[in-house]
Length: 256
Image (tube, rainbow, N blue to C red; front, side):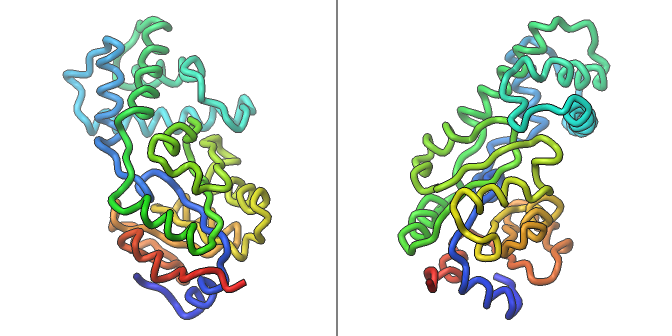
């Protein structure tokens, strides 16, 4: 664990700890490219001649397209929960890959398969995550989730048997609301009644999680196990941890 004296002093005053999900308290079975390949296969779209790198590049272009689409259409904060929302986005993805003339029903089925996979067998808790969260709760910390995703994580949290540990669950992937905007973090602080300066946020990326937590004036904690390269990007006064169990050394219990 790496930290400055000022961040340690702040840690002693923390009353609430909010968490990202993806690669913070969870691990994934495969990457996004492999996930897209599985979803396409279930929908009957062949990616046999497409490499994972081509898929990753196409997904990046689709993500850029979808961000512009969401802003231009001023979509709702929880846009993207319905497979039909992704009709044009998936059409764009396949177009980039050189696959055209795919029916609307197939494009929607591809998205439905993606959602089914992510809901059932793509993500799982990292070893010891449940025990760490339970212990932090037992010590008196208010816990919450602030995650950048298009689907409500409620069912996942229930399946992992940790939903009852969280006093607030905030989620969105819509630009303007989603990290690196501090919106979901501020909403979590507001909902729990804790001043943001008395909150900590734990995430795994500098460009989204650290920026959001610093904008919200929360104590920023970066997990480094999923992507060690993030360590080279971390600003001063950000605490870096290599496993969630290190949080138990950092947070002995609220002082007031």
